[in-house]
Length: 464
Image 1 (spheres, rainbow, N blue to C red):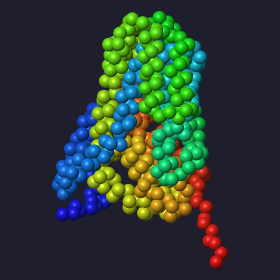
Image 2: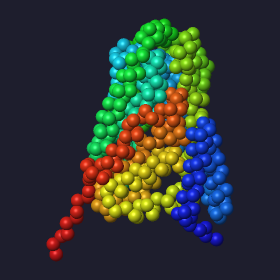
Image 3: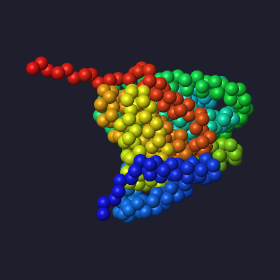
């Protein structure tokens, strides 16, 4: 028998129930996202069977969902190894020491935002920025006794800005490809919402950061620098892996080989700096992470991190959320809810708002960054064409509501990665990721004012 199509009301009730369960679990009870997501999958499976879906439908949805995340999962595993080897090789400690000497304490937070934005634009990966220079900046902020959530917010905001503006970014390439827009036209059009969000974010980081820096403990900073210089090989050679990262970006080498190259070079540096290090010790650093034994509790807390094992919590959540997303798509719930919305929009402002909110909704329900761009992009493509809006208008709305918001979702892949990297809960740094919070607002304003909204040129009929 042919299974019945899910009604709009039924799909909406199922999605609302999912949101309530995940929201209560993470926000109300403060538990890790894995359990609520798994519970939601159980509820969804029971509902699907009751509605006549076969086990094959359920297993296919799970398999299709996980399949899209194989490469990101592998990248996260490599990032865990990169973090631990960069610390062991003295790269992150060297960045911290240089940063303490170059960056003004009073303007530390806005400086972090700007530097992370520049690095992110160069390498095209927010995750790479957060897990390398981001950790160094976070350590500096902790030493200065600046609110960890604020520092994390500045790092994440800068990393997202760079990721969004870089032609090397996977998410930026995806947004333009989904709607058949030229990549560089898409990036150029992004500036109408991205630049205002960047400027306002910089002002806010200046205000919040200046008040926090007023209480910075300079004695603790000097003490930390002395410990880092004593315990780690702080030297000019630390620039080699950083330079390699930029060279790989310039040569457009994909993320996986770039990470392998950096890990390999870092391991060689460890052997050069500490010739007595055994293969077993290197393997332990890569697998279990670096363990700092400086004797200073603050430094040890900051630099005991990384390793493949540290990413397993993130990987488990990615598998669960991708499975959930695959189920929602395969069972037709997302499509059912989005289709009628797309048909009832009759103005540029309403269309842009609907895309932004739909992308945010997909982030909330599925927690996967790429699907928050792909699903609304496919659902609204024909509607935008009929309204005469250019493809870049849709791709910008997808970025502003999809790509940047995933970092704010406690069960989102990007949000969990950031929380795991800085050991700061997603809901703690969420209020300070100003760039992500402002991008959808400026996108919607642009839609209703018409500023930066491009329309397709009318096709002139040829004379008979």
